Image (cartoon, rainbow, N blue to C red; front, side, top):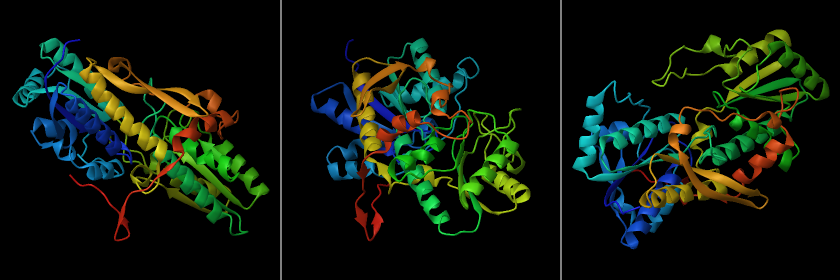
Length: 413
């Protein structure tokens, strides 16, 4: 593959994570490395607010990090998307050719020959459409998707950057909730609602306390299996017979057998541009059911955005993997890859080891990787040891940010 000379642009899209900036730092590190050996990439621009900011030419020169290792290291441990994010669904080329012509004009104006997009399922849809367009247009540009999502639901990859840190936060927080709930002898149920629309990966991590302290939620419910309210009530009663404090972990996206969300009564019905319904109220729905049908003390806890922005409690493995895959994306693009998404292939869990690869993004976009049956118990209300063996390496190790005046230092672009 002959060298392609020009500038690069990188963006972040979709819901942020505690590790998405580590991946951004990895892309920056990869481009710096390429430039140090007089490679083909010139300037690296960051697009503010993803593809929307690119269209408006709201670009920032990321060369500011080239001579400042301390600032780059701080970026790795800064939560949320430093460049900002967006949720924009690209039209099909045939439906809006003017949109793509405008986009192409921006690429030409800034001599953009390398395009990196850090995101999840919807972002890979953008990468898929954009790579198909540039291939048809004849404009020589390499387009790479770099995975990101706390949901861990991207096809093809062993795991996704950001998931390990979110899982560590959920596992730690649920463990602390279990300890708090256990101090009284009064019968009580605590329901913890965890993010996860179609896949329950993040909710599985609530059971990781089994490996550390022997404690885990009494019941765990995932979107992968139909939810039955009667079964939930009976299982909760049985748990209360064993001990007075019962903790239940549920994914926000659990549904009844007919496909209705458990929390549908508390939801607005509003959908985003990708057709995803905004979810809320699952924990409350179960709280009211326990109150009405069991009558004991009950509360629900919604972890909400803290799951994805808790930069004070990240996984060292996740941060290292996130930086490494960003760097790998830059190197792969320079070597000729395009229309691909970077991914991890696990070599070993003990000791943990992964290698990098890439796959056709058209085969990945808009697909969901669900928790497999062998990771869910026979009653569909708990997690197997095999699941915990998969999860454990992804949350191991700690990385602590530098603290200033008692608070974590954060990089703001």
